[in-house]
Length: 230
Image 1 (cartoon, rainbow, N blue to C red):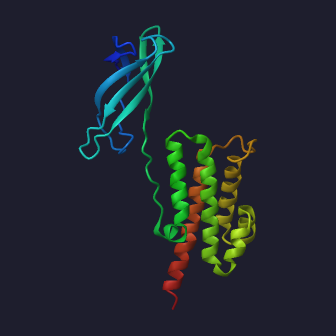
Image 2: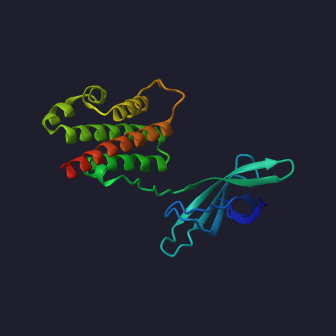
Image 3: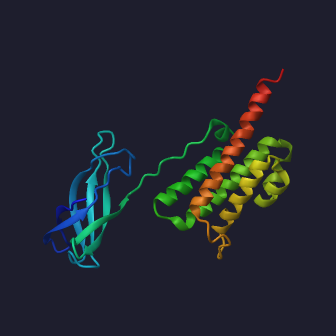
């Protein structure tokens, strides 16, 4: 991919033409594919020096959006290419709200709210608290599901630890297995020493989604059994 030139200004107001590579092809605010308008470039540090950085202000060209955002470019240099700046990330990032089924929303709307707040934290680079939020979301999901299944045990379930709820009250083997694994990884996000060093936040999100899917299957099965009971 060929370099593109851009006129930039530093903190002293001096202008320099720099080469950059890669233009964002998706707006981080509306998440639509776009060819954004380049507004202005700003350099941090001495241009074309190893510690320098480039910021480019872009504007979404969708009429319904038109938001401005920053492209963060890092200095690179090769024997053949010479100095240039490569796109590393964009900001701000408006998170895409996760969608869940009507069954899950009916049973645990709090889970959905907490989960989406955790994803908002992740989109803002707050990776140290994302896992903590997911751990809380998982507990609300499991306890709300169990209270839905056993209304008479609501107070008992509320007072139990998440692990005990899963071991003692979750009947479906698939929900139990995925929820237990998700809890192990979620607990890792709150502890000083990680137990599952070969797993990360992405594995946790997969296991929570898997748990959601199994719970959804249980709820849908119960719904149709009840509605079609002769």
